[in-house]
Amino acid sequence: MQIKQISVFLENREGRLADVCELLGENNINIRALTIAETEAFGVLRTVVDKPNEAVRLITQKGFTANLTDVVAIEVDDRPGGLAAVLRSFVDADINVEYMYGFIEKSADKALMVFRFDDPKKAIELLKSHDFVVVSNSDIQSL
Image (cartoon, rainbow, N blue to C red; front, top):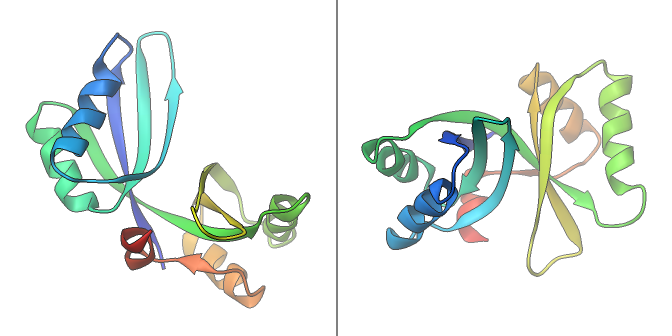
């Protein structure tokens, strides 16, 4: 089970991030997670929202370069060592994490982490075999 992440290429100049966030807000699209990797000239905004297809359509209509990527979101025990245990299981199964970022669920004792893997199917099988909760698109919409 994978969820949709939007990647948006942004010029690294004042107001570009606000433009995207305002566009989403004006269209009643709620951001659930967000991270930015930046260079001197450009940044890549990665975000998980409650309506990914509608969001990417709106963003590209406004002239931004954006696409959808399948990623995996899981619940991680919100305690010291919780994330380390998940990461160790990937190492032991020879699964590479290409990147990851986290977000906070409002009413639980779990942290939610978003992962991009080189082999997502293998990663999901591993996660389920270790009883980790893999989050679905409908879970994201209901947060």
